Image (tube, rainbow, N blue to C red; front, side):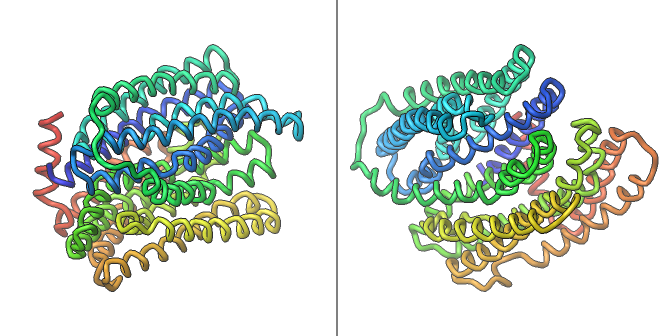
Amino acid sequence: MELSKKIIILIYGRAFSFLISLVIPIALTRLLLKEDYGTYQQLIMVYTIIQSILLLGMPQALLYYYPRISEKEYPNLVKQTWIIILFSGVFVALASLASSYALSQIYPNHHLQPFVILLGIYTGIMLFVMPLQNLIILEGKETLAAQMMIGFTIIDILVLPLAAWFNPSALGMVHGIIATAILKVVIVLIYIYSNYLNKSFNGETYYKNQLSYGIPVGLAAMIGIINVNVDKYLVAMFFSTSIFGVYYLGSLWAPVFGWFTQSAGQVITPRLSKAHKDNNLNEMRDLYNKSVEKLALLFLPLTVLLILMAEPLIITMFTDKFEGTIPIFTIYMTLLPTYVFRIGWVLMASGQTKFLLRLAIAMSSINIILSYYLITTLTGDNRLLGIPFATVTVTWLSMFVIMYQSSSTLESKMFRLYPWRKIFEIMVISVISGLPVFILLEQNLPDVALLTIGSIVYGIIFLYGTFKLKIWGNSEIEIIKSLLKSG
C-alpha cells in the first residue's frame, strides 16, 4: 500500500474520532458546572503527564525495533514491551496510594485529593492500552488501527456523557473514564494474546536496550507535555477553576491536531529507522522532504481558516458562556505551522532520544520562566493572554532547533532539505483563500451559517488554487478514489 494512503487512512481515523469525540465536551459543558468541568480537566492533565513518563517510551520503541528485527522475534518484542508496562502499571497504582496519603496530610482540603487513588487506577489500566495502536500499524493493518481509534472513541462517547448524566460531578466523570479504560484493556489483552503471547518466544531479551531507548523518549514526552501545559498549571494556580475550564477549551485544540503528525510519524518513522540502519541517507532525505510538503498542504491553510473562524466556532460549540475562550484559541492556532517542521522523526529513527530529552528540558525551563514572568508582570486581560504567548514562542524556538538537527543528521543544508517554494505557494494561496471568508464574516449571519459557508468557500478556493499550481493532482485523487472504494 502506498505510504500516502497509509497515512491518509490513519488521519481519517483520527479525524473522524476527533469529530465524533466533540460530542463529549459539548455534552459535559452542558451537564457539569464550570467548577466540576475544570476539576475534571485538571485530572486529565495530570493523567497525561504521568502516563507519558510511565509508558517509558515503549510505543516509540516498537516503531524503532520492530522494523530492525526478524519476524520470529516479534512475539518476544511484544512480550517484553507489555511486561515492562505491567511493572510500570503496578508502580503507579502503589504510588497513587502513597500520594493520596501524603496529600491528605500536607493539603487535607485540596480539591484533587479525593481523586488521586482513582486516577492512579485509571492510569495503570490505560498504560496497557497505549502501545497497541503502534503495534497494529507496524503489522501493516492501518485500516484496523483507524477502526480501533474510532471504536475506542465510541466507547468514550457512550460512557462519559452517561456518567455525567447519572452523577454530574468530577467524581462521576472519574468513574466514567475508569469504566472506559476497563473496556479498552480487555480488547487489547485479547488481541496481543491471540496474535503474540500464545506463540513461542524466539531471540534474545533486550530489556536494557529497550529501556535505554525508551526512557529518554518517555522523559522527553513528559517534559514536552509539561511544556505545552505549563500555562494551564499557572492558570490553575493563579485563577479560579471556572476560568481554568474556559482557558482549557481554548488551549485544547492545537495539541489535538497533533494526530496528523502522529499518523504520519507512525508510518514514516519505521521506514526512516530501516533506512538509517542501511545507511541510506538519500531515502531518508526524500521521505522527510515529501512529508514536510504534505504537512504544509494541511497545516498552513488550516491555520488561516481556524483563526478566521475562531468566534463562530467557539460560540457554536460551547455557547457564549465560553466566549472568553476565543482569544486564547486564536493565539494557540499560531502553533499549527510548527507542526510542518517540528517533527522529530529523523532524530527518533537515528536513535537521538537523549538529544530530544535535552531539548525538551531546555525548552520547558525557558517556557516556565517566561510564563511566570508574564503572568506576574502583566495586568488585566493581558495577564491571562500572556501565558499562551509564552508557550507559542518557546514552541517556535524548539522548531528551529529540530530543523537544524534534522538537517545535520541527514547531512544536508536546510535550504535544500525543505521544499521552500511549495511552502511559499501554499502559504500565499491560504491567505488569498481567506479573503472572501473575511468579507463573509462582516455580514450579519448566524454562527452556524458562517461556519458552513465560510469553510466551503475557503476549501473550494484553496483546493482549486493548489491544484492549478500542481501542488496536488492526479496521484492524490487516485488515492482518495481507492480509499472510497475500499471504504
